[in-house]
Length: 150
Image (cartoon, rainbow, N blue to C red; front, side, top):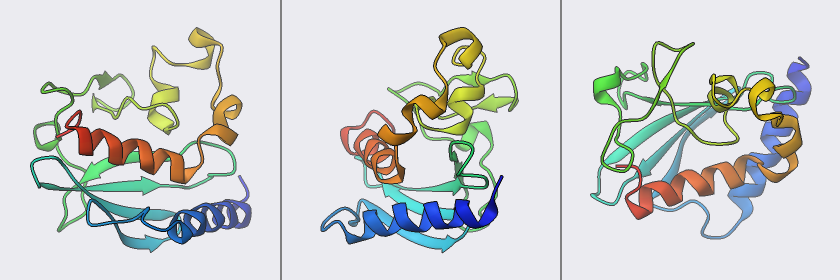
């Protein structure tokens, strides 16, 4: 809604993560930061690199959208190219015609038919302070590190 505010909020939260000693590592590397887009490479338990695109447009108003992309072209991956979740596939999303990262704190989570505020009574704004960028990155890094996501 306010591009300058969105950029400032993203800058502050990214800088907080960058300033935290040991936060970024070979298992989670910032590849590119061109607001409103971040590209972060995660390494899973098997040593495979996965590039995720963090689309932060209107971050002052809505959650970050996170999607896996091709590491070379940065195009969204087809459902067959996605990583796995608990040795299975990620759930589908009615608005995306494909899978989504079912993770609280992400835009697609709150637009999924099972997580909409009209169903759960919980809007992203209620969790915003609890789910800054660093916490979201830490959660994703943990899913790759434990093998929950491969």
